[in-house]
Length: 560
Image 1 (cartoon, rainbow, N blue to C red):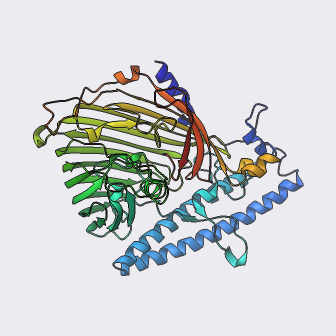
Image 2: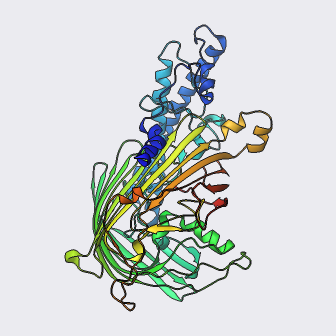
């Protein structure tokens, strides 16, 4: 029970949005105190009257801006009806940007008009981040996380607002990676690892066309690994049915991939950088050839809400891949880790997924939810060499506590039942999971992981005084803690040493691993404004044979 209480204590702040502040008590948090400076009524304070006039001028600029965006949207939609080929992709992206801009403008106008309509209501202090929605005070938002600055405003005046969103907003919604029906490794021009060495390829990635609505969508990839001398490729065809804010899509694809189940642990491009420059490859690989077919339903809700539900059949043949290179630009006398063995053979399964994302896409992750559930059922009437059921739930919350502080968290739980091949085991430890411990120090057929971080955003240091401002200006301070547990099931010999299933795990689903020992760590890091680059230290609180002292942490992507 103590572990359930621990989870509740960590994620209790996620349960409710940040309320709009109108008054501040003596016990208010320090980051809320600037709002209290607006306590004098606007009608009786000369400075407040000046600010009120400035807000009205800003409201007029917002209306002009919205008119401009509306005109651009109409023009883009007309162009979309007449274009074909590659130009369609470009216009689709532009329309997504303008729609996001219009939505942001409309919410900002509504919030500002509501403030102006209330006698004596204090204006927000942050002039560049007005954006209330559903009664929530969003003055904490750092507009540089999601919005780029316009080079100039209307009529040559400086424009304090920014309406250029990142292009991830609606394509396809920033959902968490889902294995085995997706692989980001195939969607790359260049990658480097210890199995393929240098890999050069070309890819047409999966995309949702909400506006041009083509009757068929094709995807494909092809590339060559120069160390293992292997071509890799994929080809897909999808037939979407377009409804109001919905897409129902049937698709089929075939593939021959160098793949990895570790793409939820470490970013593909981050792993390429560490392997190429530092001889550190954090993914384990296998060959996967086969095809999949399935039906997907996408819904684009209000604001940043996206929902996906899918059911797929996957037929794959797995093979072991060996280490083929030990070169890197730096790395001294280090060697790449050996490639762990998998269980080769045929794996046929049905994969069911459900995902919800309200966080606004990959580039922002400042507030909202990103949750995905995956159930894979292998064997049974679809045959294959393995029969098992595996369920994974990954829930992430990005919660602003105030203008300067974000509390971000993730809970990930995996359960398995049946004969689990080695390439389906769940591994914890090191980068992306428990950074205070050795990489993949713990493994099992069932596992639970909890990550939490407090991100002190740049303005708290920018507006501080003395050595604090000079030391941390332009940086974020990140405090983090992690907890993890596995069922500690060891690989076992099933038939004989020559059987291809040797090493596979026999597992029974259940929550018994919650009674096992939990491993935890704490640490801190200094990062850039959105936390994608961070350097820090992690200390294991639960010491093991391999993890007794602090470990250096360097990330080139957000851990979750």
